[in-house]
Image 1: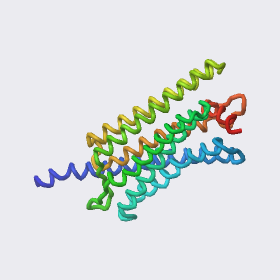
Image 2: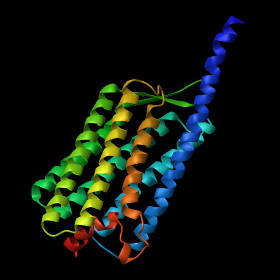
Image 3: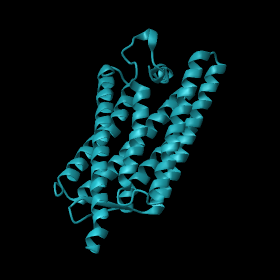
Image 4: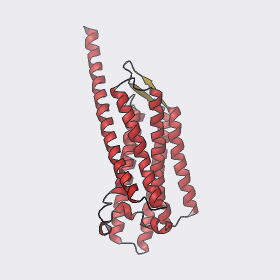
Length: 277
């Protein structure tokens, strides 16, 4: 009887955890699908354009498409253990992290690069940041290990050194690109840029940078302290979801409201359009 009493709370806890992660995966899938729908609509509207007006919507689709597929796959595996192997899930998770985060960094870089007259040193800096983000994501293949429990559910184990490397890369990348973006806005204001529009874009840029940095810090704390033991990959998924949603909202909001109500996300790339013809 004592053994039964000692094990019962553990069984209940695992059952509750399973339900929580199923709900979390369902919500993540819904948000990624919503982002993907908006992104595809934006890409369709710009299908006849060229240059960054076409490349940016494509980059915006990549993280949402990859994470839609991964979230759906993991959700099915979670509900139906044995649907696939944990090795396949591990590969999907790493691919989503590598391509998703590097695509987001590429969008942030384009936002700064074309607005700042395309300086060569900035091109090199952006290339290094994008490459570093991608490499850290790919090396997650060696840092992330997965194994199945007695019910066939995939559990994860994350190398702490990789988690620290990813945290440092995310913070450095976002602070650098966000800082450069705010600096560019200041330069544009001195050249006659609308003060009201400057304040709007500055507020949006600072808010986005703040949310992304806070998300990265919370993610690192949860993973490094093992607060989500055996499920740390879901925490990285939520972190990617926040970044992808912020970028998607920046690009897609109010896109159908006409020229008189152009959104801040569209205006951020106004100089990009002129630069690329």
